[in-house]
Every structure is written in structure tokens, then in C-alpha cells.
Length: 349
Image 1 (tube, one colour):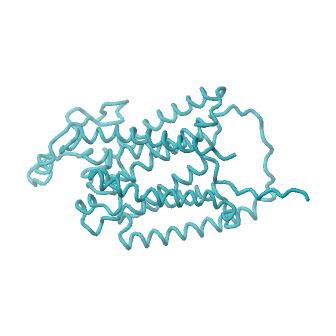
Image 2 (tube, helix red, strand yellow):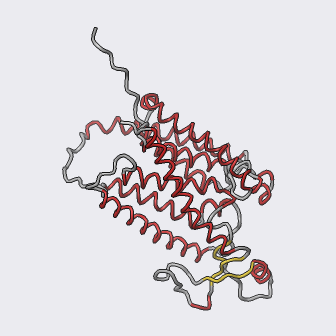
């Protein structure tokens, strides 16, 4: 049964507030850095602080000092740059950076907790525990990835690929999404002790062929789309980040709406929410950037134009569209409006 409009709006508001607050924490790290680099402090050893050596020792050094030393050929000891302003919050592509925690909190609240209209008092403690474990695992994974980044990064460039794909906040939120999907698939938020009958494998072959055929058709379509976007400077020049999100979109789309057009045409309501929500989201972030001057939309962006040149003002558009297509697709499922439309019942005459 579809969720009531009031409940759907409440879910959207709560998820948005949580995502903004979560991203604000990482923006605070940016403000702490200011016009300084966080560099690896090699004088204190290799193990580092903050949880069993997962992070190196770091210290703040003014950017001009770091650049002077690292560009001096006579300097034997070079600074190893760990992070800089923009790596944690991504204000220049705020619309993109906010989309990932939006998806994460939507999954946590709607699909694990059952908020706002399917909170079972009996299952709630178990579901809260599951969410807490997911959050803790997300932090740990994030620390490991940051440690790897510290070991391999020598001079990270201040550009959209670094801001939108590799900084700490997106790592945490991506891990939160991954663990949430995994735990939901395992059924850990529920007490389900009844076994279900195994599916009849005799029907697998034809269905599997059809699934694979249409999956490759969709993958070919997004491949052509991504190439066109890159060629027209509407996506990152190194397309791996963009393309990976489009691939995720294909997989989720087939899970949500079926694996061929004969299923898609029956689920027009959910697909309409996906496209309409994305179409509304783009101008909202466009106007937000014009209003604030600091929180970038990720496309048609004066911030990107000033930092990277006017020809790169739209290189965040591909990520922006793909991320919000996923969010609104998940939102349609969360409010249970992604299923096939029911035919009108006909009475007897």
C-alpha cells in the first residue's frame, strides 16, 4: 500500500535534515583547515593516531610553505600532503556531495527502521542495533580508505574528481549505503525464522538470458551517454567515477522496475517520480549556488568556472543527474509508489 503523502513528505524532510547535518560535520573540518594543508607528520612514526594506526599523524602547515618546500629542488625532505580545504565537504560541488548522504539516510530510515509508518515496536531495538553497527562499520572502512589514501597520495589536486570522489564524507556515506544494502539483504533487521521453498530452477535459463540481454543493452546505453557527456565537457575527464555511478543506476533500476520494457511500462508512476524529482532537484541546487555563492550546484557553476576555467563549468552534471536519479528511484520505492499500477476494478452488471 502506498505511503500517505504526509508521511512521504515527513520522510523527505527528516532525511534531508540528517544529510545536511552529516555533511556539515565535514564542512567543519574544512573550516578548521582554512588556507592550510594537513601534512603527514613523519617525525612521530608510521602508526599514527585515531584507532590502531588507521590514520597517520598529521599537522597543519600553511599552503605557501608547503609549496615552497615541495617545489624547491634543493629541499631533501618533501611534505606529504594528506588533505586540504575542500577534500572533506566539497562545497564547490555541494549538490553532488549532498546526494550521497541523502541516499544513505533514506535507506537507513525507510528500508531498515521502517520510518515513518512501518516502525514495529517489537523489531525496533534490533533495527536500531543494525543501524548502529552499520554506522560503526562505515567509520572503520572510511578510516582504512583514508589510511590508504595517505600512503599513496603525494600531491592531491584540488579539482572536482578529488572533491566529489575521494574525500572523507563521501567515503563514509558510500560505505553506509553499502553496508545498509548488505544487512538488508541478509535480513538482519528482522526476526525471520521461517524457511521459504527453493525456486524452481527449471525456469531460470530463459529468464536469465532475458535479464542479461537487457542489462547489457542498458549498460551500452549509459556507456554511449557517458562518452557523449565527457566529449561535451558535461562529465569528469577521467570518467571512472561518473561511469561507476551510471552502472549502479542500471543495476538498481533493473531491481526496482524489472529487467525488460514489458515490466517498465507497468511501473510508470515510479519512473515518473524518478525523472520528475531529478528535474526539480537540478534547478533547486542551481538557485542555491546563486543564493549562497559558496555551495556549488556541480553544474552551470561560477565556482567551478573560476577554479577550472569556463569550459569546465558543467563537468559535474553527469554525476549530479545519476546520483539524483538513484535517490528519487529509491524514494519512490520507500514510499511504495514504484510498483505496477493496479487496474480499475470492474463491477458486475
